[in-house]
Amino acid sequence: MPLISVIAPCYNEEPAIPAFYSEITKVADSMKSKHGVDFEIIFVNDGSADGSLDIMRSLAKKDRRVRYISFSRNFGKEAGIFAGLSASKGDFTAIMDADLQDPPYLLEEMYTGITEEGYDCVAARRVSRKGEPPIRSFFARRFYSLMRKTSKIEIADGARDFRLMTRKMTDAVLSLSERNRFSKGIFGWVGFDTKWVEYENIERVAGETKWSFWQLVAYSVEGICSFSTFLLSLATWVGIFFCFAAFLFIAFILIRSLFWQDPVSGWSSTMCVMLLLGGLQLFCTGVLGKYLSKTYIETKNRPLYVVKETEEDIII
Image (cartoon, rainbow, N blue to C red):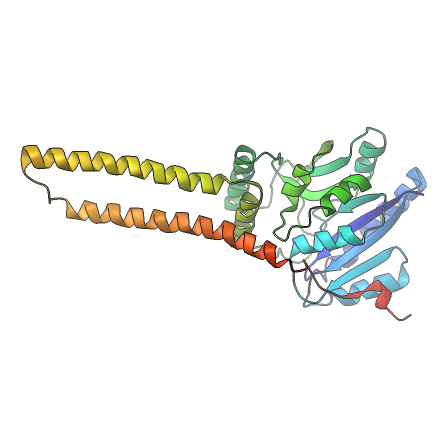
């Protein structure tokens, strides 16, 4: 019997986990009767400070399909995804959020897309951002547009981590063991034939988002740096532009000194130019520092996460 591994990274999702378990088991029972597939549900506790782990333990005791991995501290969603994929045993693997913003009922369509239509991956994308703050929606769309223009990977607008993959694609994703991970980019980089399933945005079933606006901005910068040298190229072209502008200013000052004998006026504008150039130099230095820091982290070769407990540690 084919096995589907459903991976759900969780961080302080105590109110949402029971609802997620209820919905995913309904889909699992339905697909088992229709398609003859079995499920395993892998919760990844990313250092939650609430009762998420206790719920995972109780679910694992009563349902053989439920497994869990509990980190020693919060390592981030990317580490949670990688840990879940590494622990999965299925012929197919699915990644989902536990807040039910990724509708479980789409799994059946995804499974059909792989088994009957020949795709290696079926992924979900939101066609609307209803209920999301307008400023967040605006910058999210600009990010996807920038990624498509500055990198060689294709990321659909509104793409989610929610997807169903074959074991071959899952192993390809796991072969990229980099520490600075951006899963949406990794899924695009490994290739494989992907079908996109569209759906309307769904509100969280419970709790609040753990991502602030600035955390999303930082995550976007990580994505750009991981799969594009655009910022380095930008720093280079900015430097070339201002070198050219400096020659023009030198020529202007020489001409004004020769014909109007007024070489020192405009000190305020000179100060503005100096401050602008100083800021640009710091920006370019920061870009170099960002790429250098990523190299530094990779060379340390530290593990992506540390596991404190799994379902195998439960004494029944």
